[in-house]
Every structure is written in structure tokens, then in C-alpha cells.
Image 1: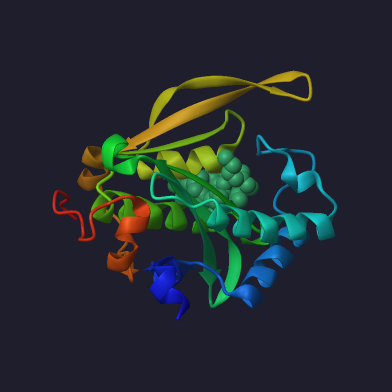
Image 2 (image 1 turned 180 degrees about the vertical axis):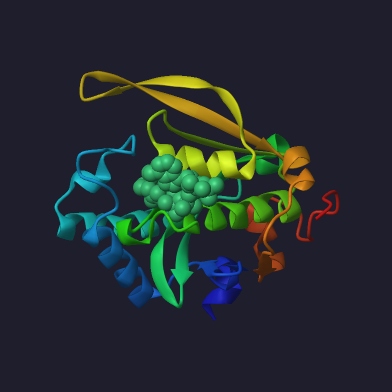
Length: 223
Ligand SMILES: CC(C)(COP(=O)(O)OP(=O)(O)OC[C@H]1O[C@@H](n2cnc3c(N)ncnc32)[C@H](O)[C@@H]1OP(=O)(O)O)[C@@H](O)C(=O)NCCC(=O)NCCS
């Protein structure tokens, strides 16, 4: 079975409203449809890579290809886990958790998008909290980092809600213009001090070697 060769297909995070997991092929198509319907106001570009400028059909295909590409490039040293986010059984967006040399760096980073009609209802915060739980409680991470343009109030709002601290800036060239990116950092220490909605993690143990970790749940975490 596929799960024997690639146990990530059995990994699932559950929050009060959401499920986060890899999609099957038809669910991937439904996710691509969500992107085709629109991810943000066309007048505002929240991404460094301007993939959402593609016409809807090409944008949808880029979601499919990006999904397969990240799985195809997976190594235990450097991985990007692009989880599809399901609300009431239907895809509404994605939440990525990624790391390089996690066993040494103990640092993960995140990225995400939601279909436009699903935004502003707390889903972004709930899905980021889900992968924060995975990183801090199960993958031995001490730090979780994020970044967003200084005028991306929704992404910065998610980070503020979860207790991230400012971690400097980056200066980015976008179509000949300067745009400033705010970096943010959440430590496990801060995360442990705060109240969180419950998150259930299933199917993790066989995935640990794929995350570059020993094949037992991290013993040095308290959560
Ligand atoms: C970024 C994104 C994933 C956030 O998800 P979301 O579900 O819209 O955000 P939430 O509803 O969970 O909001 C989290 C917090 O940010 C605040 N917030 C959300 N949207 C906001 C906005 N447009 N302006 C100001 N604050 C906002 C909310 O007030 C909330 O805090 P609160 O619950 O304490 O009030 C989503 O908006 C999105 O996909 N945007 C387009 C793509 C994108 O920007 N991706 C990130 C690139 S770095």
C-alpha cells in the first residue's frame, strides 16, 4: 500500500473545525478549484512569487504541480509539508510546514493561503496553530518562523494572535519597487505558556524518519 512506502499520506491533524492532511487526487482538484476562484484581492499581492497572477485555469494547474513538486523533492534533510486544509470535508486552502536539518536547527517555517471566501473567520489562525502544535509538541522544534509583507494584515494578524515576536525585516524587490517583509518568530517557551484549542495528530510515528528525526515521538517536549 502507498502508506507503507510514503507514510505521510496517513498523517492527519484535527482541530475543532479543521482537518489538515495530504489530499487524494480528486481533493487536489477541488483545492485547485478553490485557488481558481480567487485567493486575494487582485489589487493586492501578498506573495513573493506572484503565482496568483496567472489566469484561473493556469493558477489551478500550478496548485496541482506545486503539490506534486514538493512531494517529489522531499528529503529527510529538507522538506516542505504542504497540508491541504479541510472544512466540513472540503478543501479551503493549504498550510505548509517546512524545515531544513530539523534535528539540528530545531526550527520550522510556515506559509499558507485560503480561498478568499474562507478568509477572516479564524481559519488561518486555527490551521497555523495546528502545525505549531505538530512542530513544538511532536517534532522537537524550539522555534517557528513566519514572514509577511508589512501590509499583509491578515497574515500578521494570525502571527500576533499566536504570540509571535518581531524578528527583523527583509527588503524585497517586487516589479522594480521596494517592499518590506516582516519576519516573525514564535518560541516553544512562549507557545507553552499560552492556551490553545486542542489539536489531534494521527499517523505520525512512521513519518518521523521522513522528517529527519528518530523513529519515535520526540521525548523532550512537554505538551
Ligand atoms: C493569511 C491568511 C491565511 C489568514 O487567514 P484568515 O483566516 O483570513 O485569518 P484569521 O481570520 O484567522 O485572522 C487572524 C487574525 O488576524 C486578524 N485579521 C484577519 N484578517 C485581517 C485583515 N484583513 N486586516 C486586519 N486584521 C486581520 C484577525 O482580526 C484575527 O485576529 P482576531 O481573531 O484576534 O481578531 C488568509 O487571509 C489568506 O489566505 N490570505 C491571502 C494569502 C496570504 O496572504 N497568505 C500569506 C502570505 S505571507
